[in-house]
Length: 326
Image (cartoon, rainbow, N blue to C red; front, side, top):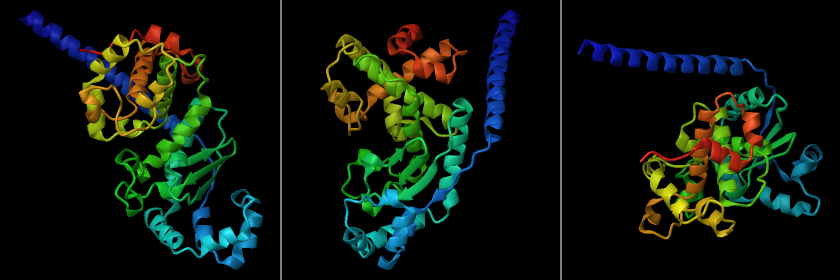
């Protein structure tokens, strides 16, 4: 009996020591990241344009030519300035983002994390614009420019989003802003897949999710992937069954383009063509790709994020020895 107690105590002590060591190392890294200097301004072009008068148009075009394509006549912009819906949208945006620090604080932490793992990253010039709720193109980023359609982040139940599918509106909240920005930048660091298999695609998105989670350590896994807590619970509880389906149907090395629509692209649910379809969230393939990448990194703790982003999907899969727990 005494020996058994001693063994159990030793196990708990060792486990606790490992967890404490990991936590301490993580805290140390976060302190280093918080000390990284980043400098950028947030230009509220949405408010500048929304509060402007027709007579202000020449100056706006002079200072912000990128937002006024030459193919459009001035009458287009003047009509927008006089549009009552645009005025209402400006009011609603200002209610949610009345303080620019709300935006800047989210981006500052994200940029610090990107810079820590990818020192070549340079902070972009940040502009917020009205996009007429173009939820398919919420964020655009180039090497020097970041443009955010700020009207896509007013809150899940906002009146402007009535009529949109729930799987879309559930991610139109202020907290998703930095998650979406992280997605855009993550894709810039991931090597393009070498082939067009389903495995290549899910691991590509698995890398994206893993990178986002590394950059946003305080954000929940559900937010990282864009699920509700209930959807996140569903994929966790059904991970084994989903994986068995992919294996038994021999989908991993298939190049069928329909698989992307069924399991990767945003959708109200995934298409297994089974009774569980209506219970499932969309994009379950990206979730499983994420789990494969996680398992690989757990087995290869010395590998850094740069190396991971360049690694071949098949190699990641084989070395991960991924197999969900029953």
